[in-house]
Image 1 (cartoon, rainbow, N blue to C red):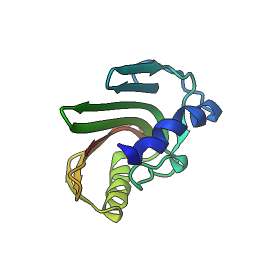
Image 2: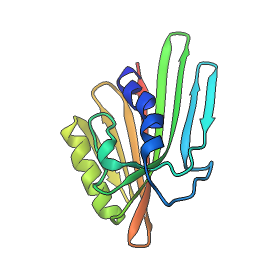
Image 3: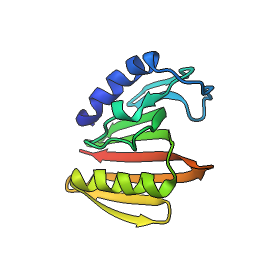
Image 4: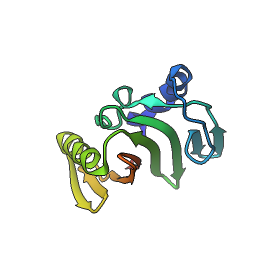
Length: 151
């Protein structure tokens, strides 16, 4: 989870400066945290962090994509630590292009990826897992990234 700390700290600050005409809904916009007894849910109206500003495990989003929501869950139970980051985003490209770019980014950052339809599943040498799902939304797409880190 330590490698994700910069995302957790900077996302709310960056989101305050992002511009968007999208209306915020609690379902897919804002920041949610659940970590060992600490829970917070922030609905940030207009939250849209540009993909060029977003980096998770060295991977960038497809150019022109925007992050609209993030959920962070981290637990330390009986010495077993696990953290999960779930990111929702939109992209101006169709799923095929977004997934091809995501697969290239993931492989360049030492992830082993497999693809099934509109979903990429991956694992790295540390045993961290990633699921990257993208669905069509007209000529664009919406997606979710779920990254689980086990220490």
